[in-house]
Image 1 (cartoon, each protein chain N blue to C red):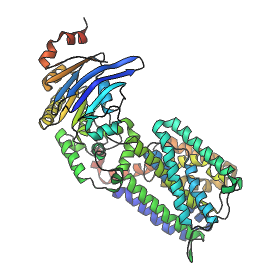
Image 2 (spheres, rainbow over the protein chains, first blue to last red):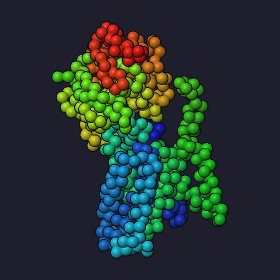
Image 3 (cartoon, each protein chain N blue to C red):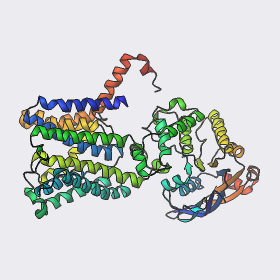
Image 4 (spheres, each protein chain N blue to C red):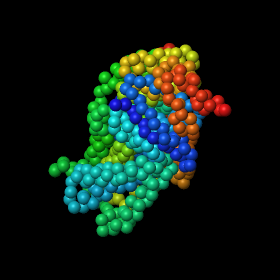
Amino acid sequence: MARGLWPLVAALALGLLLPLVLDQYKLYVLSLTLVYVILAIGLNLTLGYAGQISLCHAAFMAFGSYAVAILGQHGVPFEAGLVLGVVLAFGWGLVLGFPALQVKHHYLAMVTLGFNIIVFLVLRNWESLTGGSFGISSVARPAWGPFSFKSDRAFYYYILAWAAIVVASAYWILHSRWGRAFRAIRENEMRAEVVGVSLRNYKLMAFAIGAAYAGTGGALFAPLLGYIDPGAFTLDRSIQFLMMVVLGGLGRFEGPLIGALVVTVLPEVLRGSEGLYLIIYALSVILMMLFMPKGLVGLWDLAWRFSKSATSPSASSASPR
Amino acid sequence: MALLEIRNLTKRFFRLSALSGVSLSVEPGELLGVIGPNGSGKTTLFNCVTGVLAPSGGHVLFRGEDITGRSPDIVYQRGVARTFQLIQLFPEMTVLENMLVAAQERTGTLLSRLLRREETRETARARELLEFLGIARLEDNLASNLSYGQQKLLDFGMALMPDPQLILLDEPMAGVNPTMIKNLMGHILALNGRGYTFVVIEHNMEVVMSLCRRIVVLSQGERIAEGTPAEIADNPLVLDAYFGR
């Protein structure tokens, strides 16, 4: 338990202090990273823990983004839009959970992929509501009476607060009996059912909660950029989330934090290399997957084991293997 | 009233009949043996009772309630636990977690399983059972790191975890060394003495004959005989089924 918590506390401390030294652009990248952390945590719950593939995380995200953008145009407070977006995403997550009861793996991937494309087309063509291809501009940032989060730094801390809430709630869920039931389904679905785990209840919840987190991330994404259009919620984006979760370490709690950081920051770091940056980026992702199949969290495990065996030589020899 | 009553159970896979009209009943506190040659439908029978397979016909009654075709989680929650011929565990979970997951869905609501975190009673019960089975010192090991025999014991322990009314054991002795067999038989008899009801599928005749007072014989999906070990041993139909004419 102690080992699981202290990296999170360190991450929070870092998150609180970093804005003091970052310039505006780097602060924006860090804000975006936090939004992606929220989204990746949701996908990690659905895919990493419960083992249900979802390629429509960007579509769930769109519910949050469009809810705050559209309601914001009518002067509704940001938080109300966020709640509506989360509820919509949760509801659609439940709906998408039903196919997961019937089909698995590649077939479920196809179903969710199809859903992402449908949502994208609806966003593009329902012009009266979504603004079509032009999207919605000047999405307002939250304000509580005279106190507003309009400045980049203030909004960064606002996002950080939500990220902390998401991390804490995900930690609670995954360390409750639900988390254990999710892992049981991932590891041996038939056996899980034979020890009383209701596949229906837990698969629907895994989808719906993952989607609700995506809705939360989406709601924060829109005012961070200030404008949204359907192009932000394509299948490409969903695959990007998949990459964050896999790269970080599937089914590992810290995985999405590291994955989101790498996938968001690495392209920015490589931007200086101009035309080469996509190639370097792709290569480094391939290499990471080749040499770290358990994700970047796997490195952390190695370091932990190394430090443990260095301090107490008996610990490594006690291993029954 | 019988604890478990199977009436005319039929299971067809396409045109192949795996079970044809099998009936049998299990009384509370009994230790019933089910034997038969390979492919005689024993495991299919367990699968149909526990909801892993939906029967093509017939009925399964547990404590008088018709549970035919109910999903496995419902059957489990009613009080029927089982083990598997090919061990089924959660390999990347610890021994203790395997035990706890086997108990957590038995009672309470879905929401209570999210909100209530403490599991003192369940953990104590899991440790007590692991102690009873002699694998308590392995509780923090991943299930996949256990030896075959230890996995078999864990599978058995998981079936005991929810304190079920009926336990179906599918070849508990297969692939287990003689010392462990004696060990397991002792466990089964001790638990039976405490009032647990068992149905045991077993190929090892010596084991079945000494464990069970009543035995049912299946052959090619049909029930061909039933009786005491002595009656079964002398039954020409049973000899035919095993050795052919």
